[in-house]
Amino acid sequence: MYGYETYEDDWSRQQNKLVRQLEKAINGEYSAIQCYEKLAELAPDEKQRKGIMEIREDEVKHFQRFAQIYTSLTGVQPQPKVTASCPESYRDGVEFAFQDEQETVDFYREVADGVADRSVSKAFNRAAADEQNHAVWFLYYLVGLKG
Image (cartoon, rainbow, N blue to C red):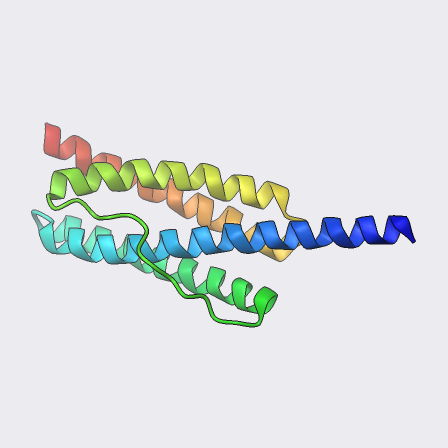
């Protein structure tokens, strides 16, 4: 009986940890969606505006997938909130986005490596790959601004 309680407690802790990680991911994606809308409006040309809107669309897909996982685990819809303010200037916003995307890659890979469910792991690994690609684009935009 003792082993069963330990297993149940461990499973419950793992599920609670995953729910917290999903909440962080959902809020991060929600914040990015809002920020990238603003950055697209500030973009110096149509090419960068379109690129940022494509990145934003990826963030919407991540948000939807993570919300779906969250709902399947908890039985309730997430209540997303903006957790990071988007800088006011385009240059500062692009630099902020680059750094945020890089940090998000590390977080998503950590979640993917620590979760037992393969479909959840796959969702986080896919999002991590997208975030890395986004970071490259934001770095490209940043270098162009400094050049």
